[in-house]
Amino acid sequence: FNTALTISWMVYDGGGSRIGWQQAQQAVAVSEMGLTRAQQQVVAQAARAYVGLLLAAENEGVVVQSLETAKAQFKLVQDRFRSGVSVKSDVLRAQVRIADLEQQRLAARSQVQVAQAMLYAVMGQPDGGTLNPLTPFRRCIEPDGELQAWIDIALERRPDLRQVGLQETIAEKEITRARAGHLASVALQGSYELNTEDFSDTKDNYTVAVEVQPNHCTD
Image (cartoon, rainbow, N blue to C red; front, side, top):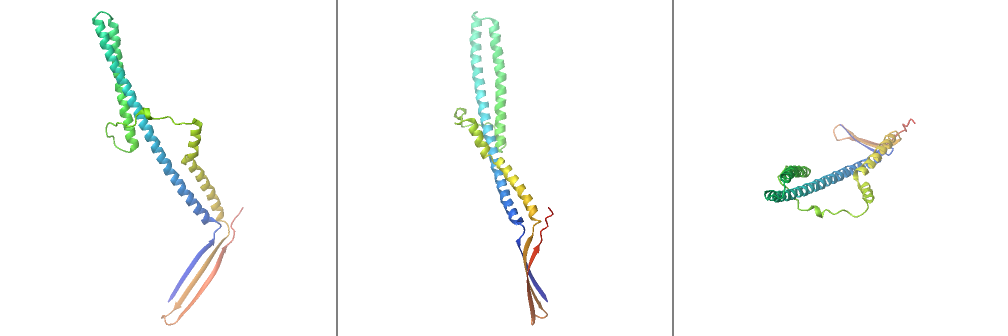
């Protein structure tokens, strides 16, 4: 009966394991930056869709007010025409204005519905009907500071740009890792062996060795 236990331990592999560990850490950072960037994009898209809905609603309100004013003006012109103060063309002009504003009102209502659908899509929800934004457009305050300052901050904090830098570093380390595979390596090996026929008389032996792989670089 023969039993053997062998242990091998790589002491030095040219730095390949250390470089691989560093690459793994950087790969985790790249993934985290990708998640941060995705979150930022969702926030930006939601804000853009929300402001788009506010603008569409404001535009619809302006058109509706203009339509009400045009109808009041039409009634005034019609009364004046019946009194003989104005001519038929004034009445026709007022009617054309009302018809034009009716078309604008329909278009504005359509824009509101599209803006609502876009906001629902960004939120990942099915279209649930009419949305009533609680934050009015007049509360959207312009940020302080020069435009170039905000651009510089955006370039500095954008995670996707830092992703590119880390990915470049990972690629460079991959070249170093490939070269490390051609360097000399050192490994320790230990072996213990037990020999017996009936467990009443045993003989054992052990071996300790150092394995050195020479430099394989060709350049």
